[in-house]
Image 1 (cartoon, rainbow, N blue to C red):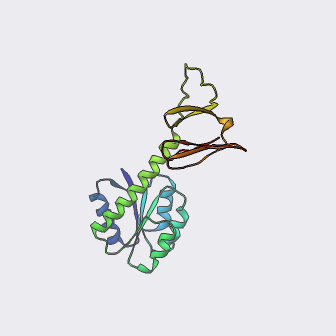
Image 2 (image 1 turned 30 degrees about the vertical axis):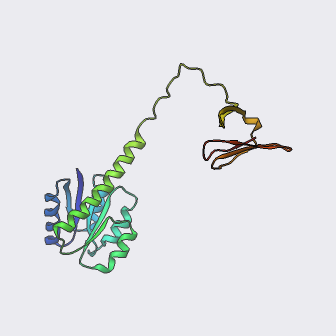
Image 3 (image 1 turned 90 degrees about the vertical axis):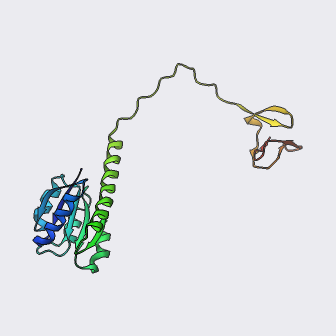
Length: 196
């Protein structure tokens, strides 16, 4: 369950968002606040996953509150009647920016995005807290250090020591061996060439 708070100085707007939260099966209302200062204490308690914030409030605006809680796990969805704050809202990593009056469909989409972010963060936290797996003991002795590879050349399989390989290059059907004096070619499986 995603724990949500509503922060809005307008009682009717706050009641509408509370109603939307109650209709959303994965959300629960854990607080409803008429000002940002009261909400700040709730958010700092660590029991808030998402805050639905009005931007224009007396004393402390929603944008200012979002800057104070930036770095906490609480996600922010802005709800406002003013679209000119949208860019600033996304600069503080808001999940969404909804214009009043907020329809349930728009609210639900924003709530889903908030849920996805919260669940992703929870999963990452659980993975990071998992203990490292214990090393698996092997009864086998480790393989001796490899010193050569086998290559198919025409109808023969040749063993080539790593010390004899000068470079390996891709060629469709040819391989050539070379030293300072001689270069010879061998037909290989496509795309594999070993030069010795």
